Image 1 (cartoon, rainbow, N blue to C red):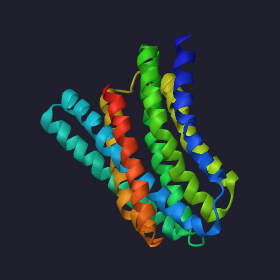
Image 2: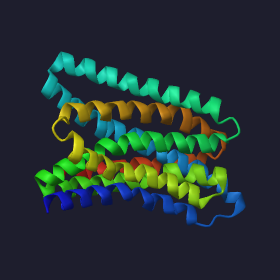
Image 3: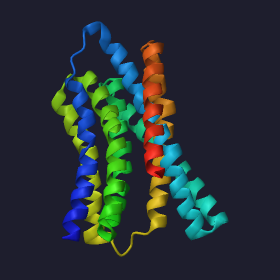
Image 4: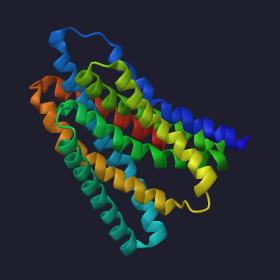
Length: 253
């Protein structure tokens, strides 16, 4: 029974990403589409950087320092962060070479999807393990994850939909990101439960933080600026920052 409950919490938390993807069903006039895309990109940028700075890096760093000691913990954390930067730069370069015919907006959506799959996988492990040990703690963690998974879904669905005009493609790729969470939970239970440590999860989360911050600054921000919609860019960032503050306050309450 504990296993079913833990898997259910992880699945619902992961698939909440799909709720963000539903934003593509909103109807916009043609002259407002660029405003919406610019605002959405700025919103997702704020969410990715905010989650990394207020959640992933502090919590993971604390765990590494606690389990590995100050010197080793700092070195491992820095290497993991640099590893994330290198990985997203490599993926971006690889997509630029192989997807010449695809638009920049499509590439951005795919990079967001890959980054968030890597993000959701260890989250699924953490949610499952927490729920398995104490379902009340797991539900609280699952709600916090679901809360920030919704805007993450927006960051995948919006660029892919407006690049391809395909709701099916946008929703499917959003689904792939969300399903990584319960898949992480299943793998944790079947194969990795004996080998997964808090330190390993922390290393993965810091690597993901490096990916998301680099992706936000080097890819999302320049793309958002190209739409020349400064007001909506600021509005999107403001909403994203506000949501991160609310998420942070809920997490410490």
